[in-house]
Length: 133
Image 1 (cartoon, rainbow, N blue to C red):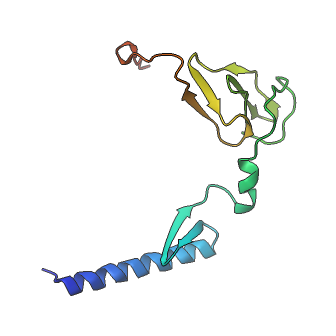
Image 2: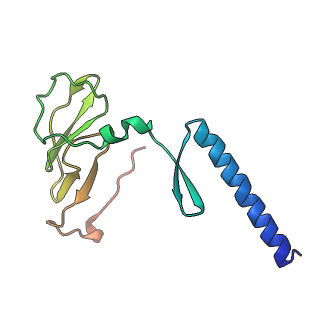
Image 3: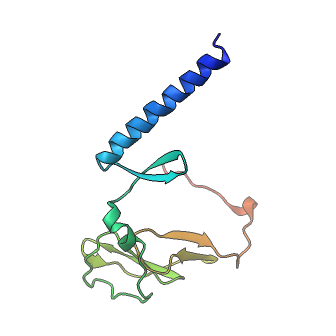
């Protein structure tokens, strides 16, 4: 078996290898690095850093005319209780959120999520799933 000294050396060697590999990937633009004290944590970036602020920038939450042109493919437009999406260069029809849910964040954004708003009680016994063959 390994003794404490051997395990300690193995641990630091592995940590050094991971840090070197993460640094090489970051240099290639595949990783975004965040440093804190002596520790470097690498996380995968979903999009180029220069677009980061744009992706989460919110515009006023107003309904867009269905079928009107849009330039940011895949962008969501959340009006809190309804939403629409830019697809194939056109805004979709407005879709209402299910009762007891809201969309977030409000306005134009690259990512959107639907959340339970607490106004409707959820009965776990009433939930059923239908599988399509």
